[in-house]
Length: 207
Image (cartoon, rainbow, N blue to C red; front, side, top):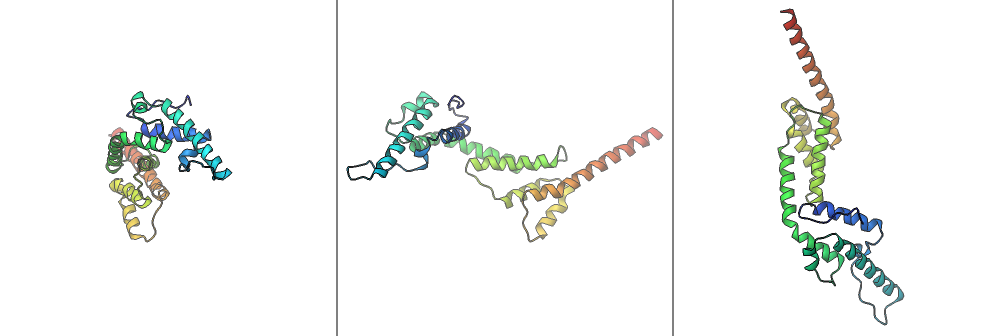
């Protein structure tokens, strides 16, 4: 519990992930996974009564943990009778605008990325995959086909042949294939640069 930081207007996504993880590890996330059962009556079975007690206990403990890690402004606006699911939904509404802004920024970053031959191309492609993964956490799931295409069109003109190869093939690529195809090309380009620099240096020395 002590590892969960207090929710603020900039950390909702990470805060929620942490909350879900801790509740699951403590085995008190039953009320998050199951709908609230009907209040038991005299004719209710022993199993129905047990499920209600289990849900109520999970809901109470989960709410205690969440309320401990949100600002007073959020706690005071929520009913004491609210379920853990509804509590999270209400909080998420408050941060919907921030999520949209984050989604827009991540998507713009992904679309505008260009590989200019600096650094490692594997790391560059994996960084694009990392941004796509972040987009998925804010409910924008890009298909693998679209991500591969975004990778290819972001490469410099030296890698143009790979776009042609991709467009002329019937089979679709996974993200590993642009990496495996581009790595040898990157190594050749680096060797050519080294050789060109060596030739230029040698020419200057001879003159």
